[in-house]
Image 1: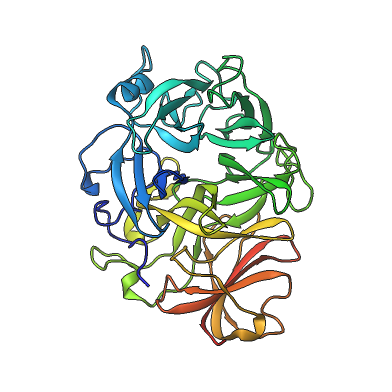
Image 2: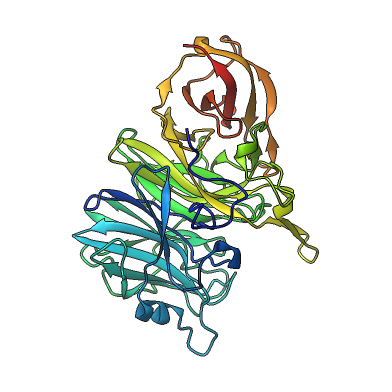
Length: 443
């Protein structure tokens, strides 16, 4: 089965998943296509001319995408970039788009400068998912605030009991949620400066940066709202974590019942990892590229696909090949420069989300039992407090030990090695997420 993207190919016209950062996903019931909107990232090696705006990619199957261009009108882009007496915003961040009341609503962030907590979340609307989108107004505004206040960035929308809610924020003041008017998509009182309530915040003694890149989804099958967020440095050791609540406004708790507001980072569902790879087609050889695993998966959105009636999680990651690594001696921090969009299947076990160990490649999720799995393989456990690269360890498949807790086991394409694999995902008795992959299976 053809992979949806190819590592070590940075030409977006050939490889549309490259340079997608902070991706979101929308199913359009009108065109019956999927659309992914992402942060405005321009790189000269992308093969594109520079045009400020919100990039969009489309697909008919959630595997193979086409880069379609940018979709803000020139007028909207100029208005969103206007910082008054300060230099214009160079690019727009972390868009989220939905189809509501017969129109497409695009929320996007414009910040004073990279790393600033002074930002605005704009709402732009269109009658076409490809735009052009025109600004309707500002949904959240933290311009002129200090670093202890929330940052109006990284928007996500969740609906509950006829109400609409904007989830936003970053590590400065934490993650917030505020009510919007469902009819307009803007604050019901017209006050973009209203903050709402804090639902997640780093502990005062927290050693890992975060949270940011938050999103909330309600899952009827479990009766919970799930808050997903990222901790870590986006260039290297980013991760994806989750908490849950019975109410959209929280409190959101981890698997041990600790509040994500200053007491827990949440259940770590994914971090930097490396399964072994023997397939030369994982990446296009050349330029010193060698397989180095997946770095910094993060800033993603949960996505329910009404076509397959399955849940997915869409996020970006960094290609871990050493040729892509840079090092800042001043901050003493490494960064992996080439990033891609990845779509993972998402399952729920005992009321908690878990991710598939492999990117979605069109599989049918043929279920397997522990007795069906044979051969040697690898396993990973995502440690809660350790965001370093997790290298998979060798493991022999044995039906009596392969899945001691409740887990999901299925057959899928093996991204790293070609062919097929039996994979499993779950949360162990210590509350840690784990993945296992075996190269061979019999059914």
